[in-house]
Image (cartoon, rainbow, N blue to C red):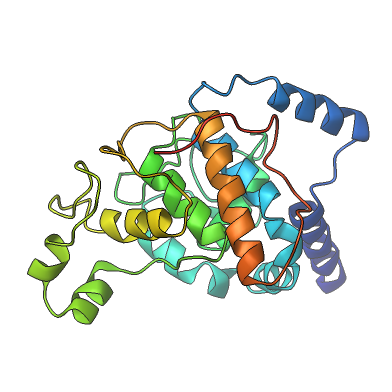
Length: 253
């Protein structure tokens, strides 16, 4: 029984880190991705796939993923505590009600959840991920900066503690007219947008439109800029991975 369990864990680890698929299928899938118009809004599932691929997250975090698979309960303790999905399963892995194993991006979503980059809609009953829904521009920024290692998520109480009080947090300014921390769900917006603007991940402008969906082209431009910035900070040159599909012709502003 122990030997069989070890074999199952090893196979799952290989599937998560290597995403083994037939070459013909992989080539066909990449061709399909490349043909997606850059002006199309990107889905949450596809966005996770592209960020995992662009930053080579499975290979870079192979040891962590392997350790996590050996200690699933500990690895997902916080996530399972927060989630409201009663039928969640860690082995076999089913973290969201609307992300079955057969879904094309389930592997990437599981890895991104494992790494703490995404967690779905945990405040909603059933905690769905909504993989086919459009990704908003502000959440795109959050996922990309996190995957690039440029910014870590901070809880509201942590920011309030660092800034001194909640009023200071709510009054945090941004150069964009539509980005502020006044809404209960936007308290983290200025921190991400200001960082991205200062580091050239997004361009200046009057409006950022944080809650509007992001296009494929805008998202890939954001990915590429964050990748270059991450490589600069790590003393790397060149790029092993480019954002999936065509080179971006749209910028994020």
